[in-house]
Length: 490
Image (tube, rainbow, N blue to C red):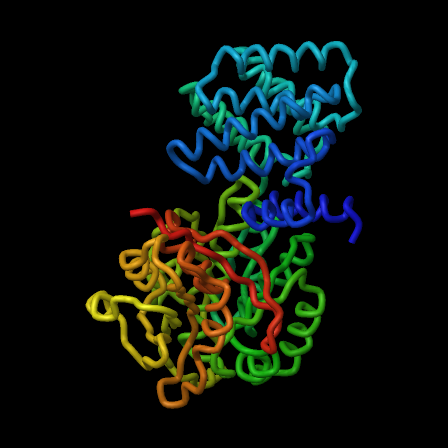
């Protein structure tokens, strides 16, 4: 991979919020000390700024200073608005208001002169909005922002980056950011519903206008016969990115949740699956159970919430129910704010195959010496202890994380912990700890390592402890996405 490709990859990681992974890759390819290349200095400033915004106290100030200096060094080597406006905003975040104003005025002068490196109309106008805000020209900032949006109406990731910066500036200035709401990208949708419906056409006629009103940028859900497939087809007709999350392997899910309702559902399922933007299988027993359906629903909603956050937008849930039960948003709690559209429907008379209950468990692999008695008091159930390795489980991921963080310390070594979350058949568990076992060597005393499923559950139930995506690891089970939760100093 050539340097340019690696730099583009680092930028993509940074935009996806994978800050530490981007910073690690930046160092691995020897770019941290590239002090004479303005493009690399700007990228270095971006990465350090992102790390600073995830830090607190003295660490935050020190990192902000390093980021500002990297941007200023880049600005000294190239006549470009990007490093200059970023240095200005970072100066404000550091409390250096006069420096921020001066750098913003320099940015506006450069924009007015036209003597600067080429940039897209969107970024030039967005930069003007940010600079105007920093010098106290609120009306000019609003006009520039509207003009920027008009120049690139569907550049959602660019919009998100600008909105994130402007919110920071407004927060530092003690001003309301509500005027930015009109510029937010479209929402991200999570959908779910009845597995068998009596009147498919009536449901489609009711849901269509709702989707037109929501106009989502992407949607996450399963593809069971019934409401799921009806909604997914309507989304595809509207060119909405479709992301499918299934609670079992495709063949198993198709047999249990699609084919048994007729061949017409099967063919529609196959078309949607082939055309989906992504397909994710939630690991567990190769059986559709109430537990696996619940976990897959949490993953789908967590991914919708995550995507909305990356785009500085908001998530919406679309649920088709028969009115007999009111599903909670994520199965356990409604900790994350989300707009809900409930659509009533009548179940068909088709018999619904019975599925097992199973259990949901947060499975933990510990390495090193931990206070097992304290973890048991916090709700842990121990399965095995041998050779400084402990296997135990909690009923909920958030409980597992809270208990481990309470016992952990970044100074302890070599203690590690990895957590997975899945449906478990207590009578035929087999190696249900397989994912946690694979992830455990990736941890250390500074971080708890968690699977993608745990990360999505935490995003819903405990957004304040939401882990950071660290990457993927190739395994006999396929590529596994893993995340890390920093162990706080004590």
